[in-house]
Image 1: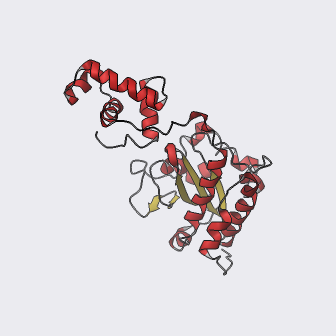
Image 2: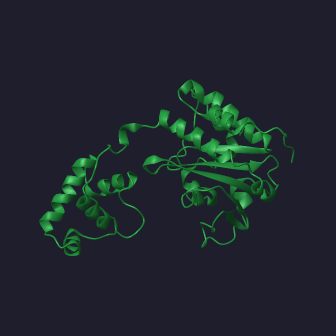
Image 3: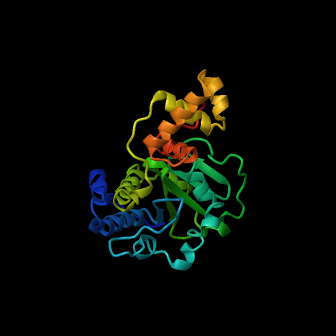
Length: 262
């Protein structure tokens, strides 16, 4: 695999991929593409795995095709939401935050395989279009997840050696670019407001997230049933939520509710 020897200055690379306005999206994407090509790799990039909508420059041109050089036929399976739900690459991004290598034999990263029950993916190449990929998950505010998928110029090539020597600057550069892009292009109409919940409101929402009813929460917290309803109603008002389900979702987006027990 051919590589250029000269690596960019880390600070210069971060500055190059920092997006502060829409006009800067294309130059930043081109700079990121040059760095990826220097490593002998190709890049696919998404800012939101929940929609897989293409990232675009100021003129509306899709970056994956116009800048990163992928044709529409290759991108089509990745942009099909039904197929993406079963894509092992994108599934792993939901459970891992650090770069990892994935191929037909499994996932290799800094820590354990994020998909331990998945087993061998003997059809990995058929499902993804290449033998292996290095993936950089991009976890953003409000629970949004993006992903960068790096593959070899030769789709049949493995990436073990490349993964072991991947520059420490690449993942931060990818994350900086995606974060800047999202800050400019995200639809803010559906984001939760910047609010502060009381400890009791957080407790009630946390137990709702665990599947408890208002009556069960009142027993757990040692307060009245009416008191629980009051705190949930107040939380909905603060979060600008129309019901308890949306209030739990928005509280999770803001980090008030985590994966552990309340």
